[in-house]
Image (cartoon, rainbow, N blue to C red; front, side, top):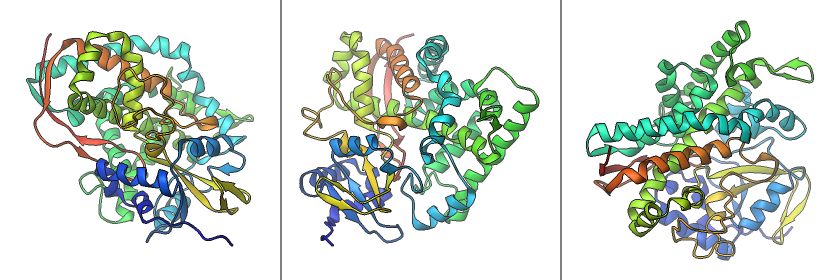
Length: 412
C-alpha cells in the first residue's frame, strides 16, 4: 500500500474555528494546493477522509458522479453526527444519487427555471427596495448581517414556499442553529443531542405544513413538494420533510452570507465600490465575484465506489473525499490574482454552486437576489464604513459573516 500524505495543514477542515479566521484558513489552503492537494485527514472525532483542494480535481470528482457518490456521507460531520443523522433518516437532495436524485430534483426544478425567475423578479426587486428603505429609515448604523442580510433572502424563499410571515423568524432561528451548530453564539446547546433539537423542531414544523397542503393545496412550492409523486407514489414523510429542509435552509442562508460578505468586500476595497457604482453594467460580473469571494458552502463529501486515483494518489473504494470549494475558488491555476476582489472579473469559473448533476438548484434565484439587492443599494449609498470587527460563523459546512457592524449614509 502506498504511503498516505497527511499534511498538518489539512486539519483545518475538521476545525470549525478555522473558518472564522479567513486569513489563516486561506494560508493553509494555499499551502495544501501547492504541497498536498490530495491530503489524508485523520482528525479526532471524525472518520478519516481525503481533502481535495484543487479546482480541476473538484470538478473531475463532481463530474464522475457514478464513481464518487453523495451517499452515504454527503457532508462532513463528526462520527457521532454521522450516526445521529443516519438514525433520523435525513434524505435531502444532497444525500441522494441518480436515478433517485434526478427524479426528486425534478419536483422543484420548474420553480427555479428562467421563466419562473422572470416572474419572481418583480417580487424580489420589491423586497430589495423594502430592505434598503428600512436601512435608510433605521438611521446611520446597523449590524448589516442580522438586521438586513439574513432577512432579505429569508423573505424571498419563505414567500416562494408559502410559509406565513409570522413563522419567518422561527425558520431563521432554526437555520442559524443548524448551520451554526459549531458556533457557541448560534447553536442550540452544548451537546449533540441539544443541537439535534433544531433539526427535530424543523421536521415537526414541516410535517404540519405537509398535512395542511395535502388537505388543502395552494399555489406555492410547499404544495408542490407535499403533493409530489415519484413513479406514481407520494414521497415518504421523511423525504417530503427533507425536501423542505434543503430548500428552506440553503435557500436563504447561503445567499445572506454572500450579500453580507459582498458588502464587507466592497468596504475593504473602496476602489471596487466606486467602480461598480460608476458602472452598474458590471453588476452581473460583480455578483459572480461576490459568490466566489465568499463561497458560503465550504465543502461537500463524496465516497469512492471503486478503487481509483486522484492526482496520482490512490483512493480506495469506500474512502471519502472532501471537496474544498473555498480552496478551489482561490486556485492560482484557474483565477488570475485570486486574492484580489475584482468586480469585473471575467472569466470567473467559480465552483461555489458545485458542478455536474448536483449543481445548486437555486443558483439562478441566489444570483437574482444578490443582483437585485446591490442594484438597489449602491445607487443610493453615499458612504459606508465598518464600526467594529466583522465576525464569521464557526462552521465546517455552510457559513459566512454573523456580524458586520457598519455606519452608512443612504439617499431616499
